[in-house]
Image (cartoon, rainbow, N blue to C red; front, side, top):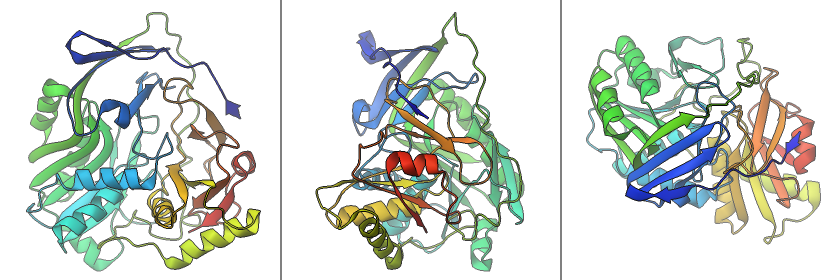
Length: 398
């Protein structure tokens, strides 16, 4: 289903450098205290279909709710990685938070490895999916539409050794507003891996403000520091006449997904810098040509990742952009939100992981791009035809 609703009231500046954003769910007040990139270039705002939290910070550089040029995303990855100390006690484990920050976390990891040249690093991301593998830990994200995260033990012996002897954790998420998820994860890690000595929380936008940040740090069981591109503070006043709406089903069926997820794309740990197989790049071009004729360099192209499968499609988009094509990248999400404000439109379709829950693509309208590649890790035929037909897309299994 394709939804187009009226836009939200624009934000307005008030004294003290604050911004007030009127949402259907209430009033969001923010203040930027420091930022490496202007606020308008980093994020917009929208309303959540979530009774736990009525607002949404919509990143313009994450590649989740808004299409982004891969080079812009890579710049953000590099900017954050450069802030992470290169002399952290090792091994260093970088964790990307499902599903929103998987590509961000993986990109920050790759750039950190490049900049630090450290061999004792591991990337792993949390997942919502149950697999027939030993789990290292589970933790919760209280305000999320889908609260449970699972971290699996790495499958390669050397990677498992890095994981289980880690002394530093770099936790990557798109934004921080309370810090509760970081605290939950660090406590779970410390209970499982007592050797942890140092925590670095890494986000694009940190909205906790001084008091919330101090509270987060006080709850951490080990020494911690925070890095971000933007630091600010928010307050949210829920609308007095707000009528609670029923949340769409956004939690999976807890069934084993091994048959749908045959490859390790980061759930079981990866070490060393990530590269895209050249065959994938060639297959993408071949698929485009077969679908609609020769690739025109003037065509606007969208590479669309699917849910937790976010970084390999980003690498594909990056390669296509490097080849001179006009490329944007984005990935689908299970996050329900109201159309308006930074979410101009939305497309709803069935997920490709067998959970029978709604997934969404925001800010992509049918006909907006001449070429669309939907890259997925699940088997051929798993992508809902509602999505492929609406976007006239080519699918590519990686």
